[in-house]
Image (cartoon, rainbow, N blue to C red):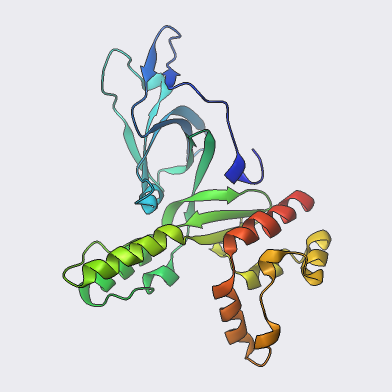
Length: 262
């Protein structure tokens, strides 16, 4: 598997998945993908993955996944019995989505930042906070693999809004769809939010990358810090983090680290 999974392509072009009997086949329906799950023992089971989320609700893929093993497919039946798994049931799953591998791993991470990032008060804001603070185990999509793993994590929306809160909730949902958090884990450590400040720290043990950081060769880490030199370190870091393009940091800095410091 390539270190950067955003460009991982497979040769799956057929919409038919063959069961154990080579003379039978199952025609997949809309939303179903070839793939596999990894159970708690680490065993990989191939079959059909039915993603729970979509472009409008990407956070739902973090809650659960539906799956049927190839060995359980009964081609004589129009409907197959898919099982539903959550992040407590599996180590992860993979779906071949439009020719690209999408890997999800079960991680323990609470999106505290998104829990309190709301313009809605009352029940609507409280439910959004609850939905994020109570989901500590979730399937996070892997976007970079290696000594430093990086995951894409979406916040969870409120499950109730009324009156003027509806437009605010819709705007927040759009923001969360377009601006996921990126969470890293180095050498299997505790997942933490990736920021430009943390990126500089976690790659410092790699001479090649550290040298490039020092020389300012990574465009994704170039913030206008000179104009903010009079600010306190904490405030300066918070501004830098807010302005940073974390996906570019993943694609440029983390990728370089994983390639050069294995």
